[in-house]
Image (cartoon, rainbow, N blue to C red; front, top):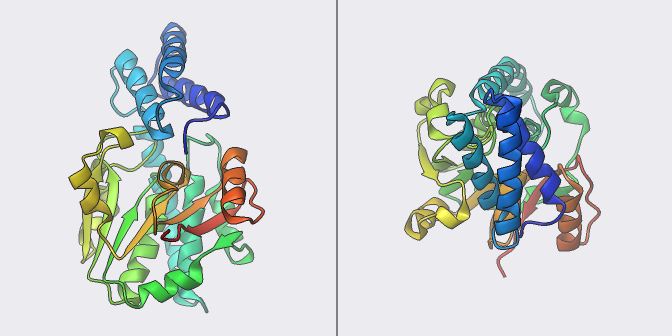
Length: 289
């Protein structure tokens, strides 16, 4: 998906949010906004959304000197998710459809997204998890693929959300004959997304058959050999809206997310012929053409 006019206001909101999280004063915030506007005028029609967002965050870092403006928010999200994890583990242990439950648990974590909304209540989603269904669901074909798959590439998204991803990953490793799950993370801090340095306190190093791979934030920065390694799996599952926006045309990918903007809802509706709205839970499969 190319950067759209609808994306301008969202990107500018993110720029101001990131600058304020970095502790910038109002004159610095003003300069960040001016430089972001200039960047949009120069680059918006020629780059993908993640390229634009990466350029925006670089502007914030250059003006504030803080490499990870969302560090505090990421810690808070992880702590909140860890608080909820025992309850979800108990529910998974007694679930009639454990795969379906684990997929729902993973998707609710996608609400913890400062790129889309600075206010969210993941605990309320946990309380209604068993009452909600996916608006689009490739769960059946994913289940079939899992019976013969040996490797999964799991593209992560946000802090906090990664804790719910761990619940799904643990279940997949226990229930299917997988040899390896490749956990794909950002190679450097980006908004409240997970990067490799954020994983240490979350216990992923204790998971057998999980290997961490780091890829650049911006698609334009990726090394094709590195990218080929990241997606060289029987199943490629990506989390979150940004991954859908940037990799939605990749054949064979699965996309697990909460729809958080009308533009993406319209795009999914056009792609699938089904009604999709903001707030919907989606497990979408991009069939091989």
